[in-house]
Length: 259
Image (cartoon, rainbow, N blue to C red; front, side):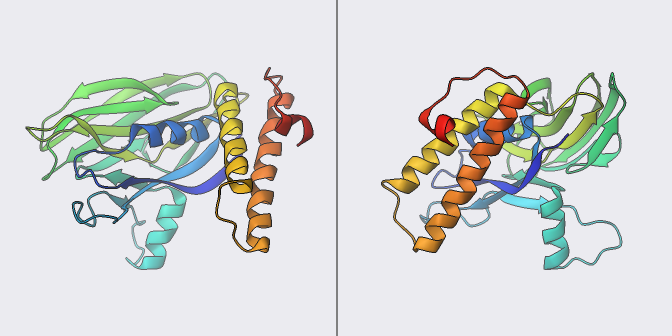
């Protein structure tokens, strides 16, 4: 089952106009998805310097047909994960006719999914479209720089998430990850969304956050500090317990021994 949710993961542009979406941010994003935590992909410009224009990377959210275009309906679509993040390319992406952010259920043994996509860009020339399946590129196809469309058939036999990634580059610049969708989550009966390796990495990250909070981090008001620490320790305990429940071998640290 999908074990939980987090509002969003953000992919930001700092001072590098041509850097594209950060692959290290994506690797963390994929870890959460691999463990069943559905997260919407969002992006924005962290405006620290004048070399990057506001809106260099942005979030598009699909508002359901018949709904008014308001800030509240846009927020609802973002929370639902009906989004993609982009440095320019625009995308339409569906799995069995369902848009990004959707959940599908399949019987034991899985089956074949129909993935369709349509792309267009008037800024970053596009080079490739890739199908990301459980954090790995399953399909990669060269595309026209301004617009293209296509589809793939994808066979699955276990619970799987699927997302679309677009690469591109300006003539004198390296290729970048120019756009990325939120996933479609497909639950196959009898198979969980869980990766022991990713869960252990997440435990390490939580322990690092706790160490930062307790030592070099600027201390907030006492109530805020306690609330943050409670959130982190609760998440750590939940994930650690799930490793035990699934029989996943792991080394114990002081945090897991006494948490």
